[in-house]
Structures are given as C-alpha cells and as structure tokens.
Image 1 (cartoon, rainbow, N blue to C red):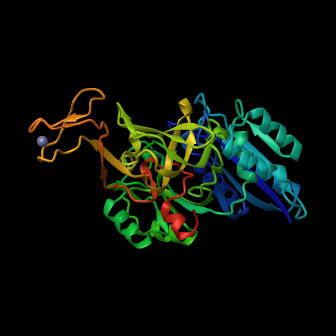
Image 2 (cartoon, rainbow, N blue to C red; image 1 turned 180 degrees about the horizontal axis):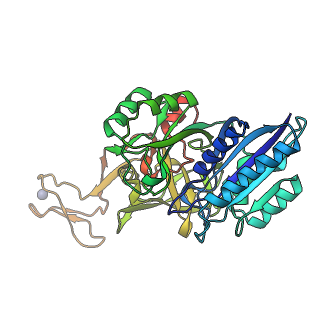
Image 3 (cartoon, rainbow, N blue to C red; image 1 turned 45 degrees about the horizontal axis):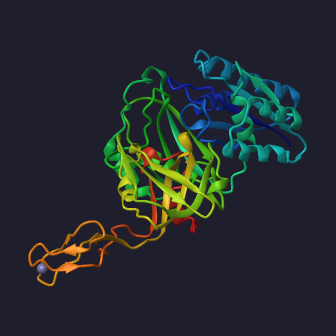
Length: 427
Ligand SMILES: [Zn+2]
C-alpha cells in the first residue's frame, strides 16, 4: 500500500482562520473526490515558546492512501490549492508550509522525522534546519512566503503519540466569524457533569472554557480521552447558530510531551519546558500586577519561578509556600529566564514559625532592651540577658500534593492532574 503523509502549518493569524479548519475543508474536498484519510487527523502542539506562533503553536497532519501517480497528483493539487486560497497570506507573520511524504510498499518512516518532532517541541528550530531535513528524508515541501510552516508540518508528520487525547472542533459558518458565540452555558454544565473526567477543561470557575475568544472559525472544542466521548459530549452541547460541521483530531494536547526531565537547575535553558525538583528558598513575593515569584534552588543553582496574574487562584497556593519546602515544578523558561509554573507537586513542607519576644513571668510580653542587650519587661522591669527570640510554630495551611493553573491559563500541552490520576502516572 502507498501512503501519503500530509503536514500543514502556519496558515492562520490572530485575526482569523485556523489550520485545523483548512484541514477540515481539505478532508471534505478529498472525500468528494473519493479519497478518504486513514484514522484521525493529528493536531500537534509544538514548543510553546516559539516566537512567531499564532495561538498555541499547533500543526496538523494526516495520512491518505493512494493507488497511482494520477491520484497522488490530484490529492496534492487539492491540498496546495486550498492552502494557497484559504490561508491568511496577507498577515505578516503567516508563512504557511505544506509537506508531503510518500511511503510506498509499506516501508517505514525515516527515524530522523520522529526525532525532529521532539526537537520541534523541545527547542526552537530554524526554517533552514527544517528544509534540510525535508531534503534528507525525501519530503516534498511547498513554502508560502518564508515557509516557516514547514517546521510544524514536518513535526506533525513525524509525531508518534504514546499518550494522546482527542479534540472535537466545531466550525462556524463564515458569516458568523467574529460575532459572539451562541453556546448554551447550561448545556455545557450538563455535558461536563455527564462526561467529566473523560472530557476536561469544559468550564473554568463560572464560565464556558470550550469556546475560543478569537475571530477564528471554531465555535467550540471539546477535549477528552477518546473519540467516542468527545462526540458524545458534542451531542450534549446546545448552540444557537449554524455550523459547517465538526472534525475530531488526535492530539498531543494534555500529555506533557513538552516536559523534559532534568536533574539539575543549572542544566535548564531558556525556551524549554521541564520537570525539576528543588527547595523553595524564600517566602514568595508579589509584585505590582498580582504576579508571584520565588527562588527555587538545588545543589547546582537557583532559578526564579513565577505564577503570573492570569493563573488566578493558583497564586493562592503559591503564596503559601515557605522557605525549605521541597517541590517539583513543571513549567517552561521564558523571558528573563523565569520558570513559568504550569503545575507544582508539593513534596514536603518545612516548619513555619514567627519569632516573638519572650513573655515575662508576670505575663507581659518583654521588649528589646536595645541591640544585643536582651529583653526588658515594660511592666515589672525584669531584665533578660539572653537575646534569642522565641520560635512560635505556625500551622501550615498548604498540604502536600499536586496543584495546577486553571484551564484559562493552561498550556495546550499541559497534562491535567485529573489525567495524571486517570492514567495512574506522575510520581
Ligand atoms: Zn514582667
């Protein structure tokens, strides 16, 4: 059997479009010509720190079987024509790429492609590197403008998912793009009640989390463990506008595929995401804007960790950390070499206390008698030569365990605690 792997990336802009929608249009066109894709298309999220990403840095790939070169030509033409007509070409940072990789006679995929996927998730790659790999492994690539999308297209083709989730995306009719989405809140609450935790991130506090806030073609997206559960959940959601249809994607969202295990702080680099264990070195401090920071240390070094304002209630947990607490942090190193926390495992709690002046035998709290002069009772005048204050333990309000940012602040790639429990992973 011959299979054509197709990768598509960077067709959208913050002002509209969505690479998954272009894929949906392409898949429907292919179907109308009698070509059916194999399995589900893949939506692959890449390095969250890529500079020119549109929302979420996601690329798409799918597989399509073909018999002969005539079919192959037709399939490729449909894809190229659609990407060139439907992409947001006028937007400066939209640089679409399409990659074709033909596997004939059941041959295996080149291992360099699989490695490239991890590189594109762990590091920031250049267009030059991507083109070189495409040439080395025999991929045909089509670049529009500077062709940055070739990077994601190759990575999406090479992706092999051990852990995976599914997302069902519902597409609006074009005349409604940019208007408010008419999705019933009550129906989402009901859907969540029936399908959670096999679907997730449906609600955030008291609002719907499945609808995007951009003028893109997506009405809503439901994320879950299986294609069946996201489809069932979709049937439970009520909405009051016309839709074009929906498409289910297999994805690396919520798998922590971006998290690299690392043993020491000094080995961490910018624009990469890690799981790192260390000791909290200070009581977290907050700065204007409601951001919280603290230093984490191990034997190799120190790194500043941050819970920014958009992480909302998660900051209430961070606030409760104290010097000496041992924690494992999952997060990425962004601007200013600060580790942005996605989730935290509080492994053990240090003792917390306040330092007070001693109480005199007469029942009054003593006062300092001056620097290094001990204490003096303001009531009976008793003097103490000893300078040491009394440690009064404070009960810790924090408990050991996992804590995570809310859905609104969650990275697409971050694995939710509920998924860690479901899959019985995480240590
Ligand atoms: Zn006294």
